[in-house]
Length: 126
Image (cartoon, rainbow, N blue to C red; front, side, top):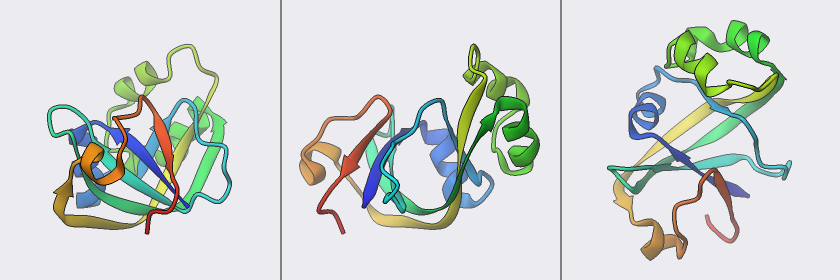
């Protein structure tokens, strides 16, 4: 099963160029069968641009996540800490294998959904 995540375009690009190997989340999908993340690059791109396989999901306190992932975070420590303000723990999705689509997809046209605030499960998607 796949999940679609809304990711800021600058971070989505870093995922696909290999400089960002972790996608951070304050909350995460609960379905343990999710193996692939479909990437929706949010405003101003507003397209589905590719997908990546999940290596692992780290769930621990914020300081440990940063210590373990900072080398390939793709963001500054200040940005990371601001993102997790008022949170004691968080999630880091480790990117395994990326696949950039040749043709970007329109979310509504191809998936029949509107952009999610956080994530949406994609059932029956290959």
